[in-house]
Amino acid sequence: MKYCIVLTLTSNPDEAKKIARSLVKNKLAACVNIIPNMTSVYEWKNEVCEDGEYLVLIKTGKELFDGVKSSILQNHSYELPAILMLPVEAGLEGYLKWVDENTGC
Image (cartoon, rainbow, N blue to C red; front, top):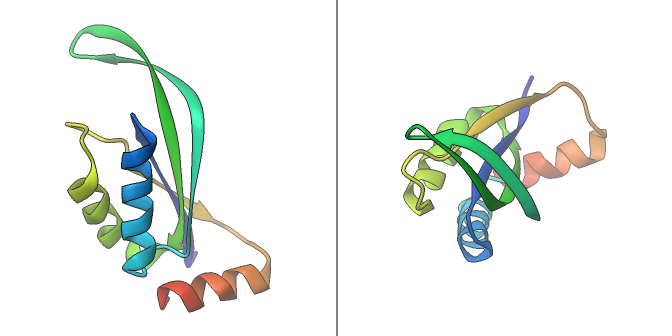
């Protein structure tokens, strides 16, 4: 498993774009998708919360995860942001080559 998708969430589109641009500019991600209009229901500090959020979907190489995580933490306003890495088992060969070319994996 050489590739992964990293997920995080933000409360606003500007923060999502800031994270995305930083990751792509620094070659930590080949592509970042921002998916708006999500509703998250969760418990935080003994209170059930319901908030609108933006899903940030980051396509990258597994070896870049630590750099991706650090970049997200530097650019994120949440006290404890969700940062989850999901393995990519397979993909279109040409697309994966493009990920390599844009991240240096």
